[in-house]
Image (cartoon, chains in turn yellow, orange):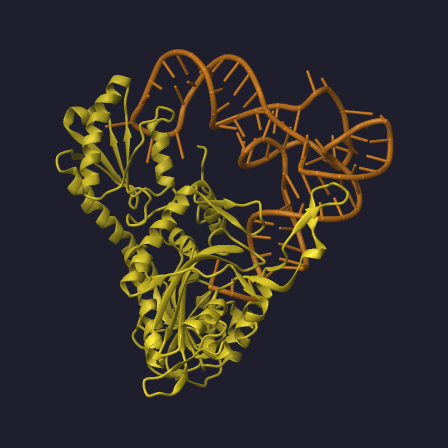
Length: 494
RNA sequence: CGAGGUGUAGCGCAGUCCGGUUAGCGCAUCUGGUUUGGGACCAGAGGGUCGGGGGUUCGAAUCCCUUCACCUCGACCA
């Protein structure tokens, strides 16, 4: 009983923290606000990266790398952008240390002050657009479709593993286009890539939409988002795609010769998802026994545990297991065989449940005699004994079922948590129950701020799709009674 | 950055109020043996700057000052 989790019902935050640490995903580092992503957690992130990267390449993007440091002057070129990020930037002021005159350790050498201070990138728009300026002269140089996998730093007051850390890993796509329309389409296209990835790979349903002005990215014309719902009823912004208009092109003077020989500013987008997706994944599927991973992201999809009474029996079982492993691997299924004698089977069962391994196989003396194997699925915790003959097909099918089942489960939960409110009173009541609420809003930042102040709920987005019968019909703002074109999505969020 | 809480072995904790043996317990680790179909058992062993610094005292995990880290809740944010 070494690794008990706090139950979700008792304390959801504690459950999350326990799980991240006990499932060996990550831990707090010696540096405040920063985390160490452990091998098991990083393996999941790598799977996410592979899937996303493949999708980026399929949509015509190429990877590149831009510097970690940004000259301070760059950041201030776009007014909204600097205002949005200035409060949370780490700044490099010196380039050298020297031994402390009193002999104790090292101190910053005051002689080594930088002429111009450097910002540790909180995002890379500025350094990238200062570079794109040199890459673009004519419409023939467009579009530029680049992505980078990188770390960024945002000096956060309060951090939580994966959900908000001072340093985090992400990808940021930065594209440059000839026309408004093309850039706008790119931003939408990448939002769809994120949504497809979330739903089909993470098994996490998301709501696509556009952000209100206050929630918009600093420097964007429009920010598109995918919003997911966690099991505690709070929303989590899981990915964003920005239509930047000509804002950064104007700030960095990036112009090009158009097809009809005129000069115009370049149109831009940027889009990103981060290690925050790990938090989303955890809080979407996992239970009081531990992590529940979709098969498409599990570091290994199947674990096999032998149950033996002697070394001799173990070698008989191992021989049989080897055959099964070969067949599974031939079908592209990843398998781990845990034949260590250090832990008993029961301990292993609990451990692999904690780590969210989608399918567990157990083989003991009885199975050896009967030509069977025990199959346990993590999502439902149900067990059955099946014939070894053709088990690889059975498992392949089961992994597919698990992938779909956990999506359906999350989808059904979300469905019960999308509600509508027609009056502010009703809204205040329902927001306490958690979940998404669709309500009418007059479109002003003042009303939005008032709602946030009084209920802690924010506008997550104006959804593109319809979730209830009358989402897209006009109405009147629940607070001010002014006209509203359609309902918008509210929630308390991470 | 505000309010509260916690720092004692790898992990979880007791001891702190009321200063006084060699700082204890559970889990984990190591050795040997018995075990193995849901977190095994017995025997033995190793492991401590009591978060750091300063002070009070004959004597400090315990009292005082200071500092750091982490957790929970607020403000801010992906």
